[in-house]
Length: 203
Image (cartoon, rainbow, N blue to C red; front, top):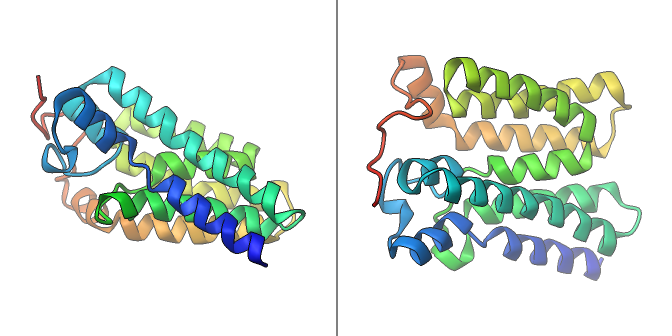
């Protein structure tokens, strides 16, 4: 039990490393949460800093999720729940980072890393559809919601219901809660599209 708690704490602290905040501070000396949409994530990094930094932030945030699951598997032994909860801890850390006054992002990139490591093929199929939705609509938030919604649905068709399924449902509910303002904007047709001038590029 002690190792499980330690694993959870480690993964929360890992998730709390907000790469968009760190990179924006290092490159431009700014707090990215005061620019663009105000979100500490890859999409806002794209708006404010450009493609290169955004890709780097996306990759590092995904890696946080992957690492968290493997830390859970290493310290939690055969417990599927420990691995899943460690992934969730990293997502919580990303959203409410202890290092940055608990103001983080919405956790989708880290969620991708967690889901892909726990349940690869359901996440892959959901990811393909999510990417296509972003390509055709240019709504990153819509693609994110499609991904977290479809992953547990596809899981049902490829696996027996167990800890990973329930964990994916928890993560899905968590993502919808974090995106509640985006859902309202989508319904009103006011959501910023990918590549829109929703934020001012820092040069």
